[in-house]
Image (cartoon, rainbow, N blue to C red; front, side, top):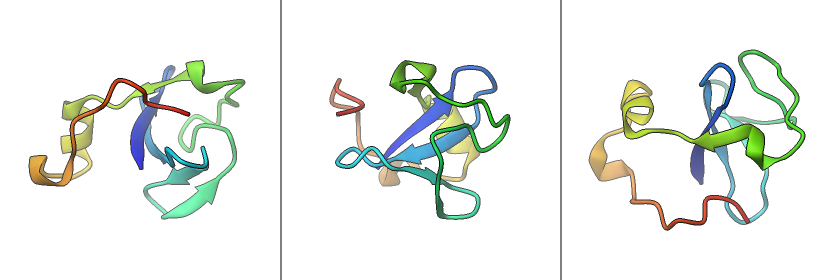
Length: 75
């Protein structure tokens, strides 16, 4: 699972690095290809960016729960 964020509002959500399915982290449910916060519809993965470490910490994740990126965020 990769933590990504909306390019417009910076809401953080999960993206499966194998299937591309998106997960609303607040409800732990699969979500449509749109932002769970501002509901912007994503036309492609360029509408997203990787979540920063600061954004990940704000969600309550610890450094020990996060693995470093490998440079290829999406399939």
